[in-house]
View 1 (tube, rainbow, N blue to C red):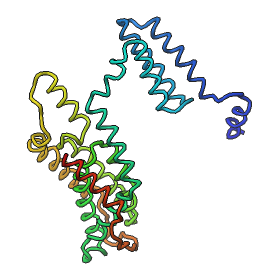
View 2 (cartoon, one colour):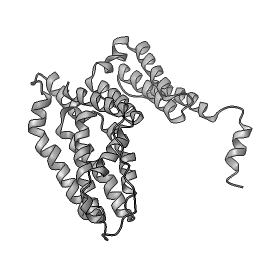
View 3 (tube, rainbow, N blue to C red):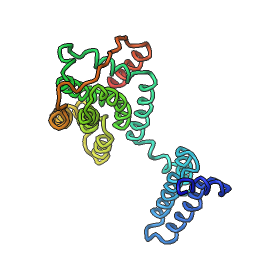
View 4 (cartoon, rainbow, N blue to C red):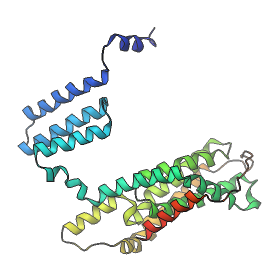
Length: 283
């Protein structure tokens, strides 16, 4: 009876319950405007934020439409320049372009190409040793995920690209601990190791922007990589690999499943996508 209650309740409501977030957002924003003990400009911005958050929670419309509504309200409540000020930030375009690159990389098959190359380059003498295969894949994938930080600026996008590859390669092992280690190790490597490259982390862009806007020197990509890369990039990845290997390596050398490696070459779309990423990294 309990399982069928939500369905019966929905059939008795003549409208989509998600639209209740609209009046809830209006009431919450009105309460902020009326009672918030802040400066007028701060109160207006807080009210707009609360209203948008209410719509994002209820999702009566697409999230992008709510974002446009929020920008429009900021333009009406303040100015068009203030509403669009965020688009001046390099961090905004870093995230947007990173998401676009991630979708393009997935659609072009580049992720599958990385998986095939990783398995094909595995030394034949270790293919029957689960511990050796785990060690090889962990090192190669962690270094590859660090290299991906140079090509793809958004850590979120890198995680989205790597996750299906790591999950598929984890199925080579029968032990759950090995699957977890092979999944988490490279993800931590690309996330934490990305601090060693200027464009690989949103925090790096924010810090360099604050330094430059405060009258400090403009930090180039090469300078950041020279001083931060060895420790915050390579050093972090080395620590992650060591810890992940010690904690999650297979307990048995036979803890592997039989798998056939597909011997195919890169397709034209995969080569083009790899070329685009390489050119973007150089620029």
